[in-house]
Image (cartoon, rainbow, N blue to C red; front, side, top):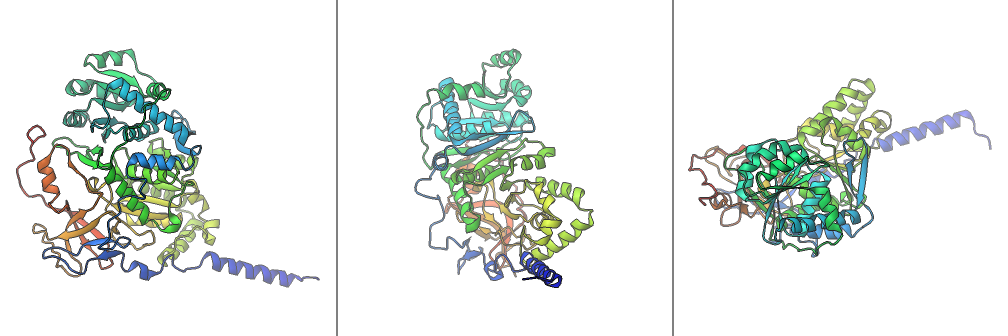
Length: 553
């Protein structure tokens, strides 16, 4: 049977048209009606208060989300369950000594490192597990700091991350408040740390992450009765005869977090294992079914060791048996790190996402093909569709997406991220973005924006499943819960993710946590008709007597 040229041309034309229709269909990713009410709201409210808002997954009358299963109640349990999924599978990826290449570690190998370091920690320092002993972390978020934190969970110690690696006064302030005896520090901070030891008399051991410790540094530490130990040696020495785990209880402290870069009356937020597991659980529950994490997922996070979001994001990936990438830590390498490791989940700060947008726009934004492709993808986004399979993804935007490795399916960030940055990522790269709002006192999460809510509004999303949220009238700002069209006032949060209190500051704790368990955030917000929260700024502080020092309380 002969086929003439006209038939062939018509067949190709029909195929092209059908393909174009398929790849550029404008049906929304989720029906708009599903976004009209995103929270469960109480039908009644008290005088001077808004209605209480919850996640739709935990309506009023049902218990708030606390844990993913009966087996997982602590961060130690998270590691045990996740590592059992694929013990020989990749757990971590990290840069090889500042070279442009990455190596990896399996769950089995990493477990030996964790047990080895924890064992040496106990034997070398004499610290007693299960005594809520604080141990400082003065380092970037690296594979070593990850091993240290997991060892603290395994042997029931308390992590004290120190955010600013260059602020000697902050280090001294935190060390003296917590009376920490042991500090894990990167070798890069030794020039700052060693002179500070004379003002931190409680510190007796510094465990140094790095290859080399000089004799001069050892001698300088010895002048203050402090010994320097190498992190790598401790991992190796303890692994030969590891001590059995000393499992924490859910209500045991996991972290004292001084979420600040300033000194003077810094407040340490006490977070328990139960707090952090609740935050992780609620975030997992907020993900749509097809987007749940699996052991095929890989997380690249740019949050610092002091950001609580890094703890529960990492926990969420571990619980699924996935892997974690530790970036080089240099802003100029952000795109290279992602290309080299091909993550599927990218967790990053607003500043870094905005820098990525600027870099890509500078490289590709002037081309006519890109502009036409972006305009077409933006039109799809306006019709509530994020995709990587449109015609323009194949002929105009493929290289743009590849700059993050080509496999990223989800970006998680925090408020405030610029609306046009989020729009750029969704349209140009075809990647879903979830923006979260939280406080250190709430384990880093309160609300999470619906993955399919692509509107350019300032709303922060609805409450996640571990907490409930309400507003109360605020006289200083003039905001009232009776305001029209939306109630306004101070944001209050209650749930298992809310902190135990401020370390050795009962006055500050009682001022922030009321008798009914509500945390008074000091931030102002408004509830929209669809149940989502908008942030309106900080509450004006009343002139009161300063919180007394730790020694006076």
